[in-house]
Length: 382
Image 1: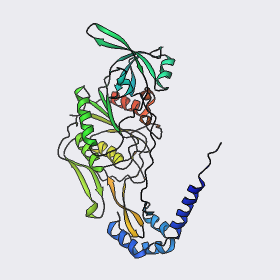
Image 2: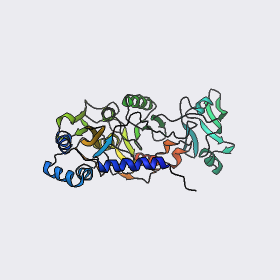
Image 3: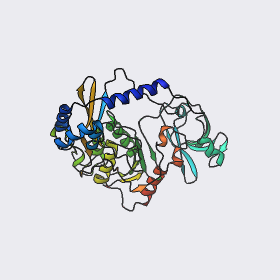
Image 4: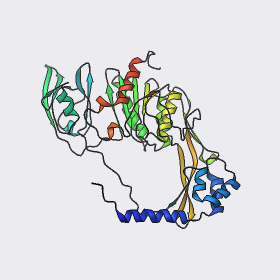
């Protein structure tokens, strides 16, 4: 059965579209905004002709992000929560299964499970059996039987994990001991995300990490300042790590690393997909240029334009591209995206949006990253 669409919502959208079509752009003001703020130089006579002939559609020929918007008071952003998780990741190593990560304050931690526990069975299914793999991919309630080293030797324990309101943090990591790899997931560059990432990397490096898999899939950017701070931690030497390019000095910024980064010794692989955008996709390109990183996964979004809204009066505003984020070499990814070194067919959303305990088993980009790390002939960078 097809869902019944809300008639009021359709009518409101139609009225908004008609209003936008009927709205006459204030020509002189638009020309002034483009002259003083647009990312690139425009021929004013050509722009004037486009406005008179085609209105907003004409502006879009010059700036794909040009848009007339109305101020909306009290508008709320709708969010969709992912399914809750048990907060545990299981990995396979040499035919045996281990708890790679038990998240703090998760149902798995509450049940007494710990990182490194050897999994003997789940829901009575022996480790490695088809029933075992099916159980890990299913609902979030599990009954684990694990083995844990103790002073008396290996100790077997049982833990019943009851799913609850646990959701993955936007930044998290774990340590993969076989390849000595630190995995770091950053879902968005928000305030203090670089310092949180640094704390996580320091902890993982203490455990023996010599490689890094940086997961930027689904990361739509956020703060360029935070992205630059992370890049500085991984930079080989002092110099540019990220830029904001514009013909106007007021919008132009060059972010630099003061010297060799604290974690420059880690050999890095960056995971990307079609939703990796803005500061995140430029960060992937920057790590390829400044830290010899490999990129695995899917082509990035090709959206690196910085857009600002300028008042047109009467409660309307005009969106205009004022700058673009670029890599240290000046690479502009707008419309093209970043092509990975190791392409992998990846889903539109990373597996982390709804974490089953078996997420790593079917994560092609993660498996490709480990393959790249294992096949690397050179020793870790120093």
